[in-house]
Amino acid sequence: MPLPPPGPVARVLVTGASSGIGAAVARALAARGYPTTLVARRADALADLAGELGGLSGLEHEVHAADLGTDAGLDDVRALLDDERVVGLVNAAGFGVTGRVADLADDAGQRAALDGLVRLNVLALHDLTVAAVGALVRRARAGGPSGAVLNVSSITAFQPLPGAASYAASKAFVQSFSEAVHAELAGTDVTLTTVSPGLTRTGFAEAAGTDAFDQVPDLVVGEAADVAEAGVAAMARGDRSITPGLVNQLSALGGRFTPRTLLLPALKAGMEHFGA
Ligand SMILES: NC(=O)C1=CN([C@@H]2O[C@H](COP(=O)(O)OP(=O)(O)OC[C@H]3O[C@@H](n4cnc5c(N)ncnc54)[C@H](OP(=O)(O)O)[C@@H]3O)[C@@H](O)[C@H]2O)C=CC1
Ligand SMILES: N[C@@H](C=O)C(=O)O
Image (cartoon, rainbow, N blue to C red; front, side, top):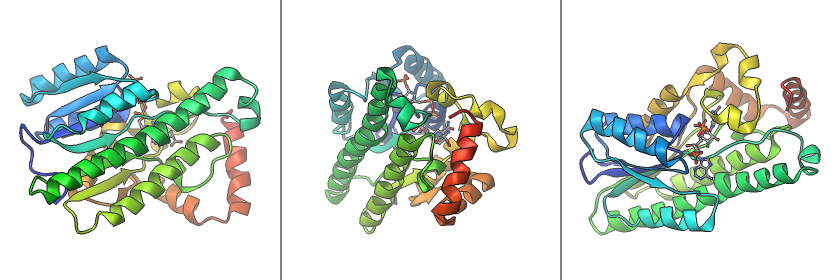
């Protein structure tokens, strides 16, 4: 059984909790009766959310401001996973960079952003997942509670994406790594689930410097609360992966099975149309 029943010592650590999907996941967990430890750089936003959740749930929601793109920040957050009260981890912290590598390569700021993307979306998620799986399996084997990890992937994980090559590749890492570890954990009391959203109305687009979300029909842009509900429910069931929304599920199928000779030129044209 993945997530144990809620209670004061069934705490879930949520990264990316100051905004968007991470904040929505924290709300969904609190609504189910799980105390949370909220992690991001923006301490004020975390404190506001902790106050909101505490008022709603009567539970203690802790705040831990940390930059997961730095060694010190990652070390601090990894240490939080040693807390015996922690039964779950949600890796939602992440961001995108749009543009062609040949263009981004000529700009020092964009080069740093790409490095930061790999550090956060890949290295930090990998580090915290390895630490959490190790701690949760050790505790379960010693007679402790079951545990669960939820990693936020993306529909961009299912195919290369010209115009967001590093971002989509970072999510391909998340998807592949997480699904493999999910299989490794079979027979243990610990599960690892990925949620692979499509376009979702959060701070993501602004952080990625794209207005593509404003150029597509509202129909294809989802809500963070819906992604969070689907992801937390899948985490609680111990599912391997979930892609919320029929449009996103069809997109994921197309990304997985369309021949690259057809898919890549089409995606390149689409991203250029959106100015990526
Ligand atoms: N929105 C979308 O269309 C989609 C998003 N996703 C994924 O969802 C996840 C959440 O993004 P979303 O909610 O949309 O975007 P937001 O920009 O709203 O949230 C991103 C979160 O990541 C945190 N974060 C960013 N950089 C760092 C850092 N260096 N250290 C610690 N925390 C950091 C931010 O907190 P702070 O700035 O306070 O540090 C914030 O809480 C990401 O992994 C994204 O790739 C997947 C598919 C679609
Ligand atoms: N918004 C992005 C997150 O992954 C995307 O879906 O392209």
